[in-house]
Image (cartoon, rainbow, N blue to C red; front, side):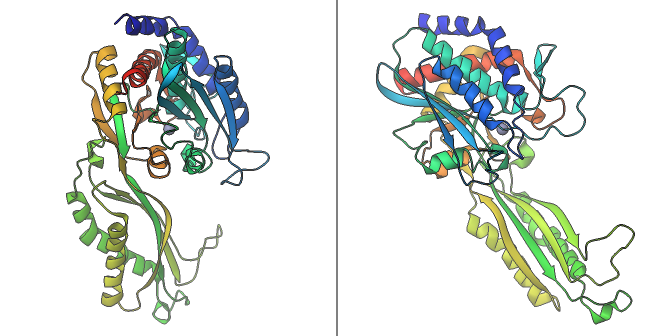
Length: 424
Ligand SMILES: [Zn+2]
């Protein structure tokens, strides 16, 4: 296949350009929160693709969380129509990054180049993946082949805070709905030999136990909400954790410890807030727990919620004075596409070709923007595939390996080419 061979060579010859592009992207401090530098970063991507014959649109997600005059939620979507009818292959990357945090030995926004790696906040998650997809698509266009169908690239915001000003906003307005778009690759950092077909679901909620305030010297005149919360924790340990541990999934989640239902207790706060030097002298009238329950594709949100409510209702029956409130904070349903679907199959074939290894099909323990493309956009043929190393995401001294970026760009280009020409 001479077309494919030339394409791979062309990408190899653009290694330096790929590195410089990644460094440029890292230098936009697109930190979320608050949502810094979104517009200049989106415009940088837009200008570049405009020069390659893409029709570029900027979509300002007005009124979404965090959207202000100072921090506008600006997304960029670029589309290039081919010479004949055919499917649309879309590469979606989020341009926001998490705060740099402590522990860096290098400037997180300089794009430092060292030992065959590019360092910086977002290098791995996921500006390295965005740069690889840009080089992949550009190389495909520059090949001069008559490409059918269309190619799209988007740079979207707010993935790290739920995607409401980004992919969710666009999906609600039809940007990800077939037949406008047929196949989506999200270059999230899941390792260069892995094709990620979905993610677990999430339910974040708060349990509040309620008591009655009294003087700390006469606790029998009050009712301690913290002791009630202790009873909740005890029931979780006794009745829920063993059940969750036994609930295994067919989803190929990595790491394998996440191949079951999980519940994390994120925080517990009880009693009056402490003023330094003045501890609370009272019996606690309220105690709140925030928890993070992760769901499997085999589970239903309603029964997951019901399970926790049942446990609390049982405490109402068993324990004198037990009163509670259960409040939803956030929820995402699990999602998983078919590993034999067009986008997963063509990407897997490209991994075999470029890396000479058998690709691993995985699911992510946490969520990413696939949820919105699937549930809101109603587009099932979506995967995540990108060069970053999963474990480095959000860490200090985050980096992306240059060889991985070049290889993933080759995989993305081959996968897109075969989807355009053959639909798989
Ligand atoms: Zn990410």
